[in-house]
Length: 283
Length: 267
Ligand SMILES: Nc1ncnc2c1ncn2[C@@H]1O[C@H](COP(=O)(O)OP(=O)(O)O)[C@@H](O)[C@H]1O
Ligand SMILES: Nc1ncnc2c1ncn2[C@@H]1O[C@H](COP(=O)(O)OP(=O)(O)O)[C@@H](O)[C@H]1O
Ligand SMILES: [Mg+2]
Ligand SMILES: [Mg+2]
Image (tube, rainbow over all chains, first blue to last red; front, side):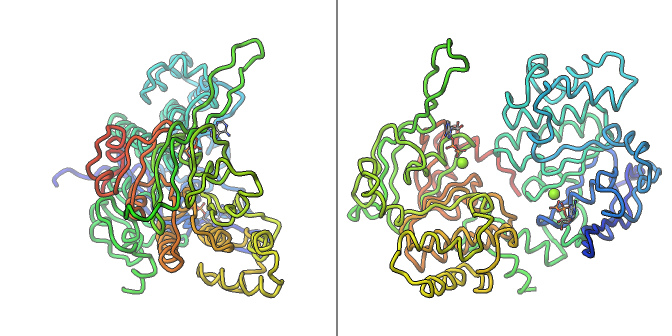
């Protein structure tokens, strides 16, 4: 390769998140480091509770305030440190620079307002310079391949299917023109057919807009079809990271090997599923 | 499948229609919601029949109709040769023991206020009223060991367990009354892949050692292929095709099944 690698958009170094409740301290994430470049998809995988969500929420201060929660380390967005910024400054990063899409669109959307109103509010908050907010709403809805954006804008969340709600959430994130989209298990609650539509949509957006995507998932199929790099987390630590093909096909860490080995694969029926325990015992 | 031994469960032309109320009293009543509409299949003894399809296709309703958690509009449910749809509630009672169900979200299906002993002894008190308390305790400990938990876990409450452990408790509760058929409604869908593998292996070990029969509902095609002897593919309340997983999931005849298969990301 002759092309010089571009400067990372986001540089995370030694990020740590600790929760304090009474006398109990939980280290939810520690020593997390990664780079994210424009137009790149970094997948974060690991079992539930391994610290995937908290490390992404820490980037924009979406965690409880100190002393209940302490965030340490560094996260630089185009060189500018995010950790320790004031709430005011973080509001300008959230949505506008780093936007989030979560697993349950139904719980992130407000049931009492129509979709158009909610997207318009996000635009007014994060992009006050936009003059024609209604046009921005319709553009965002058509960018997520919604055929009839005007009708969907007038719909309430409960009138839409799960897949449509997730599209609306992505449209709301896009309307703010973020550089980085954090997609936290965006398709876990959806059927495989809808999952494919949403993932194809995200792949197109990253190509067209050079948006970087931090994709949190536990689905290795999705990782291998969509991610450029993978980070594997276990108990708050990164146990392995690297290019997708390398991590998927020749994982170095026994834990990564175990996680991949225990997934049943279509067309490769075995007598018995391998478990993480079998794999860790073998190594 | 051996045609000479009758299947444990045979469902013929099952329909479950829910009445739909008009949004306003002066509007005409819309037609019923046909959650399940003319479904026929059989489950041979000791085997696993897998059910796949998109959400809303009628998988859960089919399973629930068998144990009267959904109202049967039409059709026959033959269990060991007896049509369950015609039975009064007293005559149906023994089948509540012979057929058990386990659910996707073990947390919602376990009473948070009682400890594991309470959860496991409730079905024993109903179906084995002659059992003494000490017999019940011994049985509960044995049940916990059979799902790889320990006797010490009897005094704990559901919130003290991980998702995978709670699903083991759900399985132990289903096993308590020594059922023949277990309807497994997405039992591993909410679990991490690592935990999924252990629970699937556990269900298969139990099937072998206890001779259980499963109706296994899922949406992960690879899991369904792994566990099933026979697969039903459902869409909009109907079975679009059925057969052995080797045919249905490798060389499907129906466009719908092909679409499901193509949507699975390969790696
Ligand atoms: N608000 C909170 N208060 C206390 N502990 C928390 C909070 N949020 C998350 N945790 C803990 O942090 C750890 C990592 O959680 P999370 O990042 O949500 O895991 P993942 O997204 O990988 O499933 C878990 O042990 C979880 O219990
Ligand atoms: N109690 C009910 N009343 C009305 N409609 C129902 C009821 N239960 C299920 N349905 C509808 O029946 C259809 C099939 O549901 P279900 O069997 O739960 O599907 P699946 O398990 O395949 O996701 C869905 O459209 C659902 O909304
Ligand atoms: Mg999470
Ligand atoms: Mg269901």
